[in-house]
Length: 596
Image (cartoon, rainbow, N blue to C red):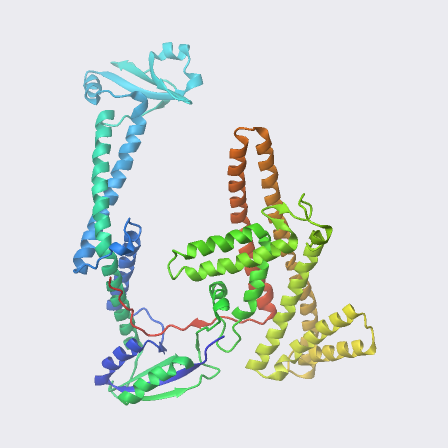
């Protein structure tokens, strides 16, 4: 549901304006109307500082520090300076140790030797060169030709030396290796030193995180509140030589009492009015506890426009069923329900709604898994369990699941058309919905008579009435010829569109079948592993089952989420006449600090 908004216009004397804005920010209910702009240089500078602080917070929150140990520091500028300096030193040391490790890797095939001796030989025209060549090419003939001395070898290459005296320049056909300027022992010693320095820096950074995180968060919130305050000042209209300040904004109906009491107490001149069709009204959703869980999914596409229906409460049950249909395994559903429930016990408050959503999706998966007779890849219809024939007949076979997918698709399409008619009546009036109602009459009436096998005159009358509504009310404002033209186009587009939309729901059956088949294959391979060896077979049997079903859950869950989302945003939204493009309600509010 979309909460109705009221448009407020304020007229405030310039000397009282700043305290008035401070009070509005504390109230936190007004969505300010104003032109979008980049803002003054000062606002941009503060915005950049907020971004800089958020990067530091993100970095510090990855440190090994618990919330219980957080302590608020005092000097934020000094804290930022210390954190950034320590971060730069830490990154420099980490880069250096990676470089040292690479040099050690290059030197290890040659062992430990004196770099100084190599350099002194070079000064006396004795050049020691280092090469690597594939093992199969380092033959005895090659060794004799180049006077090569092999130092070591691995599974792929041979590493050898060639000593060149004077002007002798016979170069082997091999890859020459550049030797670091430090010995292997020196590099390993430097690696240990760097590791100790990095450990100390990490300890210091963990200590900085305990005081820095709450301090930086408070400073960020203060800056954001200041930025928003200055942006509202920029959006303010000025009249009568800037003596009077004019501000406009939107307030949700359920929050009007709060601001009205303040305005009356302080004698502020204002005007409150309902929005007009030309207003760009922000959108604030208010759904029940179940539907609210699905709001993030709907927001992935778009918020509804202010004047249309919020479809969240209507697509939520379908999305849940479609997810369960696609995953379709009762065992996987139980894992979702139990796993998310256990994680809830220690999850943060912001994560719990997503875990509740997972549990609801798990319930649907469990129920549809029972309907199709699938439990952790086991086909309960054919499995060798002590089920009676009567119990086995309760499960739906693949043909019946195919028909169920089409039936669910038809139900959602018809429901979408009904919502479209309701939306048209709500926004424009009954006559604008008659064309859509005509299609509902044709589809529902025709379907009812087909199922009941009542080919009577009443059936023909229903079709005629529906056809008249479609042909003459698809364009209620047009001329008779325009109406007929739009009606013909509506017949063509709706018939072909609905048929194509209905076929799209076959993906529910296909994904559910593929998930069941993959689970079955995992079980079959695991059984073969179990029978292969009486000793290690049971161990690898369990490991393969865990790995195989985990991969199947991950892969199938992704498809089970994406494809119902596509059916919602394409087929359902289109048939429901969803417009979207709404702007989120963002109140001008103080960002509260959370001291520990």
